[in-house]
Picture 1 (tube, helix red, strand yellow):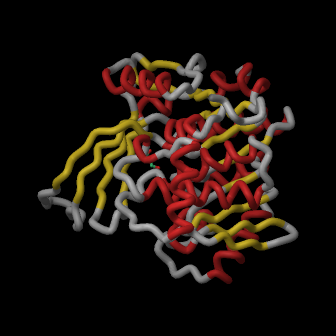
Picture 2 (cartoon, protein in one colour):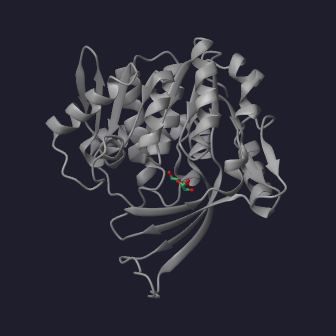
Length: 315
Ligand code: RIB
């Protein structure tokens, strides 16, 4: 059942197949290591975010480019099953569907290497006259597509007065020029560091986190939301800094936690919640997501979210 107040969410982004293997060590060049527990799953930051919003009851369309291969067929079937409008999706006859090689350790932490393949075929021309941007209330983008394509989509959406959420992942400094078109950006801690020209594993106290987020505010967005894993989320705007606590859960797989947060944030804003309320709800969705393996199977419906909230409050 659609439940987003008649508001439409458009995700322009990536689809990747996730090839996950569990290991506590990453191989160095020239080395072969043995991992275990392999799984193949639907993913890609764009598709994950679209499904996260749709599962909660959002009216969601996805625009992206998939290859003309088995992975592409399965990706589209999944999105259709999840009630995501895929009428604006392109297929590439020359590039294969994107793939994410995901390494997962026993703490549930992940390392991901992506081959974007067909995702890079989505061009500025594809989005420059896209009717779906006019129809949408919210545009959600990430950085697994060509930057010029994302920039054009965001520029048009801003011009049309839409709320634009940019999840700057995977982070790169060149993306700073897109921030002028964003209403909200939501990096995680390592992305925040990279966007500020620092090492992704540098120490990040709350004060430093606030300072770096405030710096990004100067590039254009009205709000910077930093997702900080088990430390919760930080909302930084011109007028305030608000901390949102995370739920205490045992993480099985953190892959896609940021995606579940982003999709849920768009959904709850569409539903009419304030930014702070939407971030609180989206944080719970992120916590739910890390308690299960893979991404799409770990995204909650509205009912599952409600049950989880009750359970988390009790424990
Ligand atoms: O954010 C997680 C996603 O990043 C995975 O689904 C993987 O495919 C990569 O795109």
